[in-house]
Amino acid sequence: MDTNNGSSTTDFILLGFSDRPQLEPIISGVVFIFYIVTLVGNTTIILVSYLDTQLHTPMYFFLSNLSFLDLCYTTSIIPQMLVNLWGPTRSITYGGCVLQFFFALDLGSTECLLLAVMAYDRYAAVCQPLHYTVIMNPQLCQKMVLTAWLGGLGSALIVCSLTLNLPRCGHRKVDNFLCEMPALIKMACVYSKVIEITVFALGVVFLLAPISLILISYGVITQAVMRIKSEARWRKVLNTCGSHLTVVTLFYGTIIYMYMRPQNSTSQDEGKFLTLFYAIITPSLNPLIYTLRNKDVKSAVKRILHVEKWSAKS
Image (cartoon, rainbow, N blue to C red; front, top):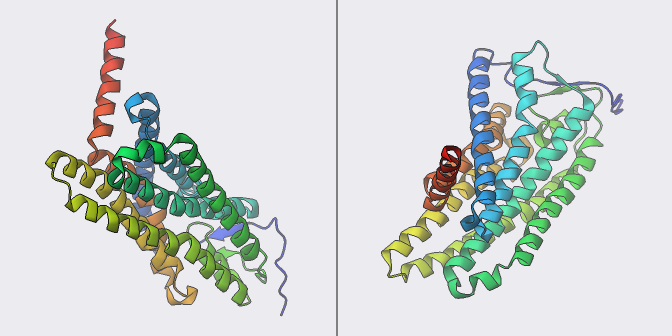
């Protein structure tokens, strides 16, 4: 058997939902709407967190990083997806596929760690309120965010190098709407136990370990909340922690289901719709979840709009 990868300049074909042509107009419209919501919502959170001094806190520093990450993540996927859905061809260059695969994996891994960091921040805020500003000092916050970004980068470099070196025997068709690890592995004409073990090990580090830390943090937070006597503070804790817990459930739920099972146990159609959910829908829901349940963000937006309105009149 010829296991040559073929020319690295050969374009790949993203099959996407070509087997369901009747759904493609609906999917493209939904994706476009969610992309606009993602751009507007996450950009708003970044600007509001920067412009309003009352939001210069660790929580909104982490939230701004999450919003920036979601902007980059969706932008690495959706424009190419819409071009393929609306255009006559479904191709993507080899270099474009590599970049899309790398950035999606890098940013996705970073988000796993960042959500765990945000859970620790909520633990410190609720369980150590008197020492919160000392514990979550700017230097520690920057180091935690830097660690998350570098961890995601390291994970992406390892998985990308292993996956892209698999022999494809001339296969060019990617049975998904983006260049993602499960679809690229299925293109290979050999089975790699090394990749399976590596992906499982990284899954423990980037999925199971962070979700365990998040669950422990919220277990301690729950105990602390039960002792809170002030109803106003109790509601505020539930709002901020509830927002983060909702995002964690949406993101980790689909990711763990997708990546922590054997690759051949998930049908391709199921994998496509799961990818569609966590890669496109979840990033658009994040700003809505945080703003609709968070009075601080809504108040900050009102203050900024009021200042702009007053400046325009003067």
